[in-house]
Length: 253
Image (cartoon, rainbow, N blue to C red):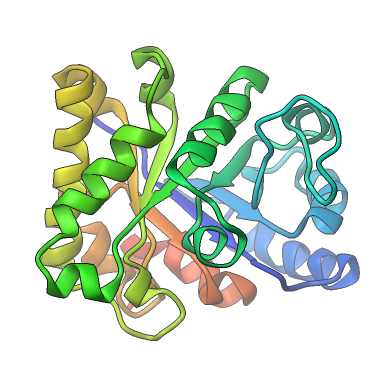
């Protein structure tokens, strides 16, 4: 099955609305002919600007988080309905920084993913191991367990349409990156987990990104690997030219 690649930019806690407007304006013509789906995930305050500026373009807008409850006393959170009503199409769920700093668990990741799906928002579900876990030979056990927990109770038809991002924690923002062979092997493990939980057709359909410091220099070799369907890009997504080079990886040097 041919899976359409997907490149998503996670801006993290960067860019004011004015800065977002400038970045998006520069990015739109650079990725207009992209052969992949292109997603930008700005901070919440930038989302209305991003949605408005990307209307009529090939850019999708995603959020960096989403809550599992429809509404209620959850100070600082944002619901799926709130995001959906302004035109958000994707939401990052379970990023390692959320797990590390804000108490995210496999259970809350699952709840957030389900809320996104119910609202018609595509979750980008993040899984990945720490350096200690990799050195202990626990990578497959960790990512398989995270994947299974995140997908608990989600129907096969919905799994086919969501996105999983493998982000080795030790390679995020460090300048380090897994080799293309390591990334491909671990993503293959994630796909085998989906097959075990569902069926071969579901596993073949789900798109799985690599999210560990993909950049203009390594995007082409990573994207050439058979199991890698895209990238969840951090630092390189904050400069239009750099992000465009990742998006247009087939021609990147």
